[in-house]
Image 1 (cartoon, helix red, strand yellow):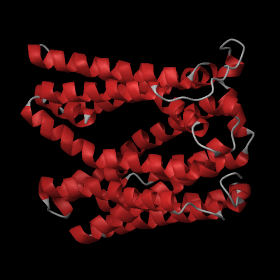
Image 2 (cartoon, rainbow, N blue to C red; image 1 turned 90 degrees about the horizontal axis):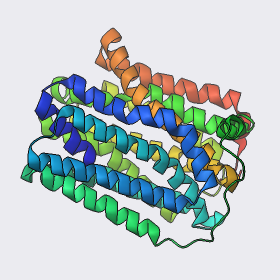
Image 3 (cartoon, one colour; image 1 turned 90 degrees about the vertical axis):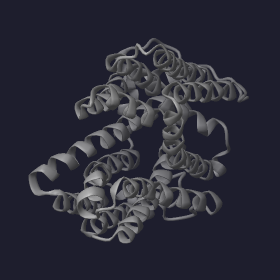
Image 4 (spheres, rainbow, N blue to C red; image 1 turned 30 degrees about the vertical axis):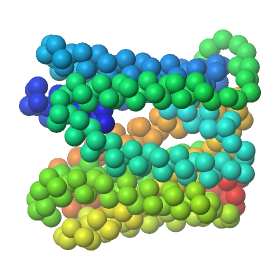
Length: 375
């Protein structure tokens, strides 16, 4: 909801696509700068308190935007400032949330919990933009107020979680502690392989960044078609995540993850070559389903094979990889589209994703042979 409201608002104020790019940059920079500090904090302090503080900060940011909309004094620069603060809060929230989940369920239920978590995220991806756009159409302040209320509610709900308090890791935030997550990942090839596979696969397969071009120039379906195209991957991901929650994977999870990445690449190529809206929607739905398959397996492998005292720092590095791949993946798609054309760029990206999966099978044979999420 916040992404839709901020994007529409800042474009209405400036009429500049460059400012839309600055919105993404304002979110990415604090995540990139604060990742290691956020991971260290998640391993030293009560994770529930960190998440609650982040939710309240994000809610306060939405309240500032609501007040500025009512007064009519909200500038594009002020919106970017709020987005930067929200991005800083999310830099702490995301890895802490990932590290908290294994404390809430038993190991045997963890893969199913990850799948349900993914389904909730995909539901938000589908419902959130539509609801945010509807509320913004009523009035920008209404949208921002509702967003702030939801953030505050989330913070209060986190406060109700009851788990056994654990003592944070002793010691100061020195360089050795800050970089401990990176050191741990490098020393564990299966975890390094899973995280880096996602980084390069998403980096090369970022076809969704070019959806507006397909909607307008190739499929000729207009804005309504663009909305359908954007929802299709989330719909496929939601369907698959619910299926994984009901019937979690039991064996050969390493091989299954590689197969899912290859299917992701094939679906990307299929979408790139499609000239039919129905075929394009089907390809994007398969793409989203394959993506969530690999996400659930990767998160289960990373969290279940990382000691609790290290989960915050490892999750922070994982979050940085995911954020980098998403942001740079969009940039890569735009750059290759400018060089080779839109369709060749998408096809090259899909082929590159398949090639990465095949190379990673040779580089990380331990990951390929993993049978269960417990490793």
